[in-house]
Length: 73
Image (cartoon, rainbow, N blue to C red; front, side, top):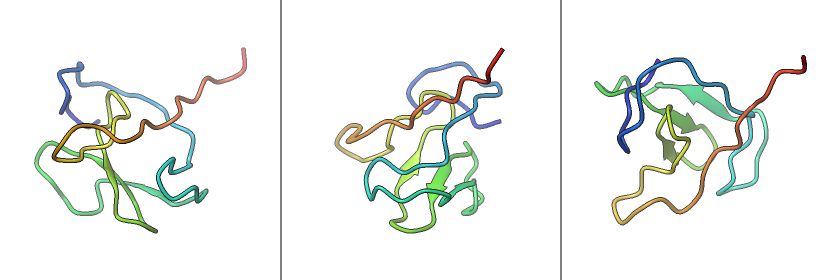
């Protein structure tokens, strides 16, 4: 339940387990670095993503966004 680094509301969000920066699948982990605000980290390239917006937490603005997961109805 990461907080909103980019101003989004805290809550539960689901993302496809794919890193848009390094193009690996099954590599995302929920806050393995134990940051206060929480984040999603790629275990292959170490990119950090905001858990509420899916945006890359790069210091000069997001370079990529996670793909949202929409469960089938």
